[in-house]
Image 1: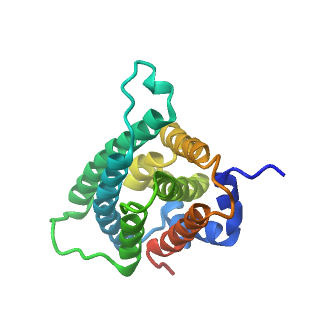
Image 2: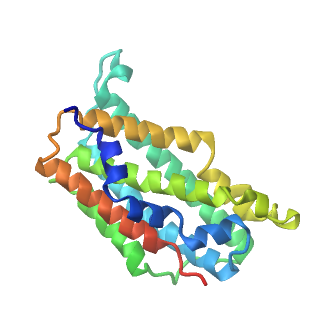
Length: 234
């Protein structure tokens, strides 16, 4: 029997939790432009804090990566993995600037005073664990793919309500900047690339191995954190 690809296995591993993480009521309100301002502000400030654990996580992953020096390196798995990590850092640096611009322009935000919620700390702990020196690149890549896959599907869910957005609300930052950021073709291609690399890394990993089980654990951690990361709404 042919073993499932790791991404296929994880997506089928806990479908209820994945659906809960990516179809949260907060996303429906965001997609229909009915989200309370304070709820959007709460999410923005926490996602900004989330980034400050994502960056060192990616730094740890880059420190584990190999950088082939041959002229044909672009074709090697090692180079493509390292290139993926570099792209992730580039993307998140841009997103950090995007968040801070939105906070200043739309919320008169002044830096300082925010503290991480327990849900944000769950992400911080997950990144610290998955990026630890004793964890493999496979485990770290699982964490990266899991977070980005959840974000892609979550924001696509928000976008699915676009026909319900009143005309006068279409210029809101949710619809001009935030939702497009995680539903554009470029982001979807980025997530697809991570998944393909993850499956290549896992090709020779037995499904009952400790490393495979650790990937399942990371997936479960991300699903819990993602479902609870969205602020509570009525």
